[in-house]
Length: 85
Image (cartoon, rainbow, N blue to C red; front, top):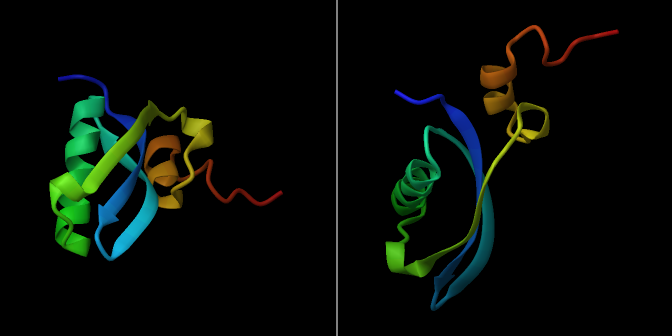
């Protein structure tokens, strides 16, 4: 089993009545798994078919650059997030 990483998937939803860009961060072992998760999530939440989704870029995100606060907490750890000085 490989190491779990955070991937940022950037793309566009292109339906006849909807053209919207998206950027999602997901936890996965490989970039292919991250893309699958995004397809599944967009399909279930927004009723978007796969052929309406155009993936533009998939990149691994280093822990310090994770934008999603829940994923950051998961990866970096509770003690590092929201520290008060």
